[in-house]
Amino acid sequence: MRTIETTALVRYTDEKGLADALRGADALFLYDFLSTALRRAWPAADRLRWVHIASAGVDPVMFPELRESDVVLTNSRGVFDDSIAEYILGVIIAFAKDLPRSLELQRRHRWQHRETERVAGRRALVVGTGPIGRAVARMLRAVGMAVSGAGRRAADGDPDFGEVHASAELAAHLPGYDYVIAVAPLTEQTKGMFDAAAFAAMAPGARFVNVGRGELVVTADLMAGLRAGRPAAAALDVFETEPLPSDSPLWTMPNVLISPHMSGDFAGWRDTLVEVFAENFRRWHSGEPLLNVVDKQLGYVPSGQ
Amino acid sequence: MRTIETTALVRYTDEKGLADALRGADALFLYDFLSTALRRAWPAADRLRWVHIASAGVDPVMFPELRESDVVLTNSRGVFDDSIAEYILGVIIAFAKDLPRSLELQRRHRWQHRETERVAGRRALVVGTGPIGRAVARMLRAVGMAVSGAGRRAADGDPDFGEVHASAELAAHLPGYDYVIAVAPLTEQTKGMFDAAAFAAMAPGARFVNVGRGELVVTADLMAGLRAGRPAAAALDVFETEPLPSDSPLWTMPNVLISPHMSGDFAGWRDTLVEVFAENFRRWHSGEPLLNVVDKQLGYVPSGQ
Image (cartoon, rainbow over all chains, first blue to last red):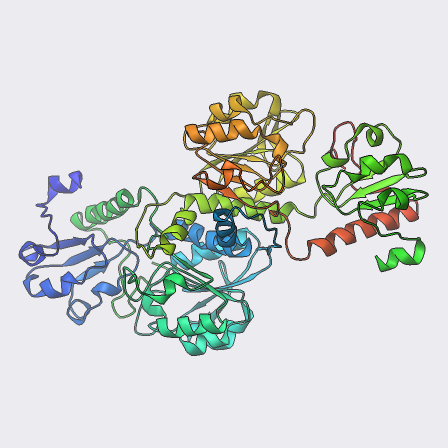
């Protein structure tokens, strides 16, 4: 932020001071990316032209006043892609090699040989065809998995996915996959897309991974599905309510792996996020086109940008 | 085994009946591959010409009487390679993404965000340049790790490893790696190669993975090393004594992942092992050269075969 301080007056604030800080400000770097404070402070934004958010998902700022304003919104697309892809591959192998059970047996000093699964050859559906989904697809292909995508529009011959199914027809395609991986942005269209019908359509033994947003999933339907064996297991990094309440049944459900919204957060991510903002600030200050401009109607950065 | 029964008289036996079954037998398929029964039954082998073992490691049958005999020894090289590579990648990602800690926090219903590590860019040394080591190297490279090998002879420009260090100079090279992975066969030369000096030479934070044989490691030195932080962590699938005794301190050491000699044992491995033997039996019966002939002086199948 040093370079920025030489060319701009920088105000640092928390949620409480946001309205005061916004007054007269041209640009906002929203570092607390899950905060809903911006909507409350919005009436104070009297000359705001640009908001940059320190995350890939922009759903927390997709409130009507910002959406319908002329304020440009940019995100931190790209920072988390490869780290999230590694995390997803890690939970897939953990399931295949029965690692949680090995740890449980280790606690009991029990030597109990089991047969494990191969990862190569298994079929994965990556729901979300943005840069995170693409990084995931490349990673899973690299270890020999058969990968397809699901996105807004169906496509063939995609360089990362091969076949892309239309998310609107998701249920028809779900039976064909061993792993279903949710990395879609949260929009009006994707909210609750993983519901009872989706889980019922999954193949026996299929596992579900969610690193997108908790609200992609109808949590009650997921829990009912897990009890019925579809999905057979789930790795969840995001939740409808975060932090996940300590009395949530998800904590203790068998075959559920829970992590606290950290799949992309590799050591150094904070510096990288600041670098992304600093580059966009340089562009903004010198009148160049900004990177990662969100289409506020779609709710994400369209591909090809 | 059906096809074999049409062309040969097949006797099935356990350890107890081995001597009786060996008498008059031309070939032995040793399915219980960790058994030491063959040495005790050896005097009964009055016309044995071929032993096939249902494993990659042949150390349990490297006793002098077999070694110095004319009996041909073949192994099941190739069956486990890719499954073991997946397992190794899995434990590497589990360490990088702090998965065991996530599971521990999950048991306590605790939401505790941490920063994780990237896997791409980390340096791995694969000790053992046979087919398992090569499969591991290809897998780790596929996810962006920087991989070298260590084997009997130093080499440059190896297709899988790039650089191969001589195992005799291992300690000089160990400081350069974040992950040290033991997949070497157990021979006179490799026995105890991971000793106090080796662990002391590892980089701070380096992690050790052993899927080769427990006897590659001086277990007391490994435990002392873990207490001193070098290695910083270990994933162990094989042990000097198996099953690992329930009072072994390894079960409860922090940063140690224990699995019960199962890293290669994917569902279907038994059928695949029988197929490998059946193919070699077909060759043996029709006078064709056998696959996977062990060099009994080296203690493994030399590469290029």
